[in-house]
Amino acid sequence: MKNPRQSQRGVTLVTAIFLMAVLGALSVAMVALSTSQQKSSSLDVTGVHTYLAAKSGLEWGLFQALRNNQCTGTATTFKVDINLPSNYHVTVLCTATTQLGITRRQVTATACNRAGGCVNAANDSEYVQRVLAAEF
Image 1 (tube, rainbow, N blue to C red):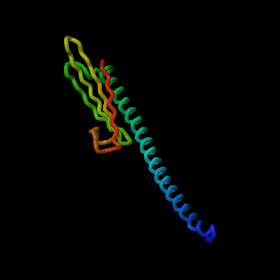
Image 2 (image 1 turned 60 degrees about the vertical axis):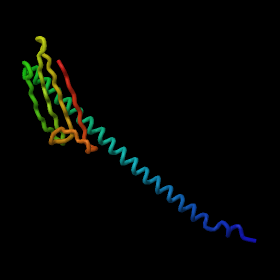
Image 3 (image 1 turned 90 degrees about the horizontal axis):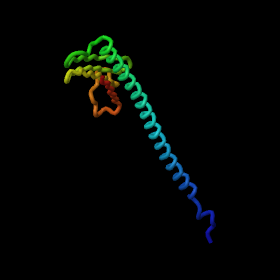
Image 4 (image 1 turned 90 degrees about the vertical axis):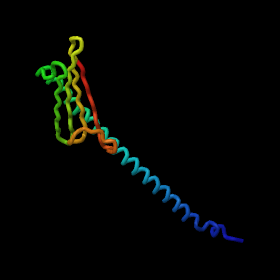
């Protein structure tokens, strides 16, 4: 008759290897999840900064159009490129059109997180662009 302890030999080793494999897989999954959350959080902050840059550009453009009267007449356009610190770029465009004796002005501010200018970078996963417009 066989000793019951002899038939159980090696079970502990198989269990330990299985547990190590499961814990290793969980560790890899946790690192991947943490990296994804950090990138998402970083892009969220960049999006807020870009929105605030666009809002600042829009307010500047409205001031130029209303106070300094730089956006009047038919098809008058001004465009300003503002290079901000921290690699943000804002372009402000003001257009005025007159139809049936009514002049409509539109100020558009486009902001992005590229110092060189705002171009839609389809292959860049970290590119953020915000566009704000006001019409009066």
